[in-house]
Amino acid sequence: MSGTGRSSLEAVVLGDGSLDSVERVAIRDALDADAAAVRQRGARACEMLAADDIDAVRPLVDDLGQALTDENPGVVQTATSALAEIATTDADAVTDVLDVVATLADADLGGVRLAGAQLLATVATQQPAHCTPIVGALLDALDRPPAHGDGDHSIAGTVSDQITSRTIRQHERDEQQHERVARQILANVTVAVADEAPSAIAAHVEAVADLTTAEDLVVRGAALDVLGSLGRESPSSVEPVGDAVVACLDAEVPTIRARAIRTLGFLDEPRYADVLRDTAASETDDNIAAFAEETAAFLDA
Image (cartoon, rainbow, N blue to C red; front, top):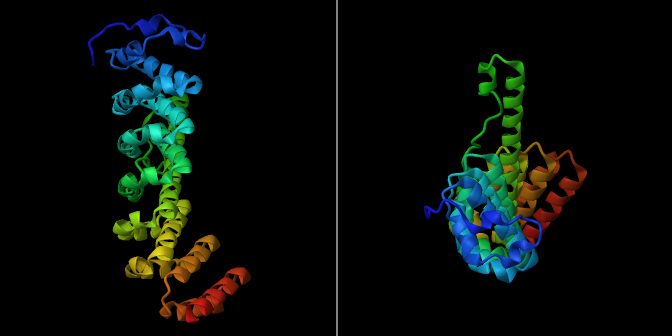
């Protein structure tokens, strides 16, 4: 921190159009101020500037990236929102801070994790290749168990006051929901990377295969899609984890079985033809059975 007690930005009423008169050094000073409220105000000013004139805030991207490591969650979330506003207009502008954004996947608060995931999704929608260098970090985050459980270990049960207990339980449910959605977004970002640059996944194929057993169906399906994208470009890269894909043919959820069939079809390995015919014979969903039979015929051709 700079040690400055106040910033000239504090005298500005955000939202009244007066940011045009604020020097960028004042915003930078605010981002580095001692008080968390001032740092958050600086991040909010960046967000507003980005919405009106992205060129005015480009020089502050690195400062916002540093703000993502702030000890105050409010500062982190506001800085993330500012970077998302910038990325919406120009994903290239935030490339240098994406490695820091990826670390938000391990934040203590689910809301912070969600904000980071949404920022990465904004970038991946425009320029998925920009997320290639962080795909390993994303897979590591997806492989770790959720930080917030299913409520069995809620601290609300230790509180005697019913209103307080309900408030705690609602907060815990919100955190679980934020974390769940963040994981699903990160999984979809990984799919976008795999579609754009399958070779970036090759070094992480074992990690992706592990996710085919994830409890979250979105994550599990995404893992199969990632393997499918890699298999389409380099079948031999996926072959070592082919058994993990085959295991998904027994999944209870039809969409997972269908994705497993699709992935096996990319592996160009005749030995899976018999597996798929067995699946077709036992499959209760007629459409999936037909898909398995067609894919088996493709592999035999």
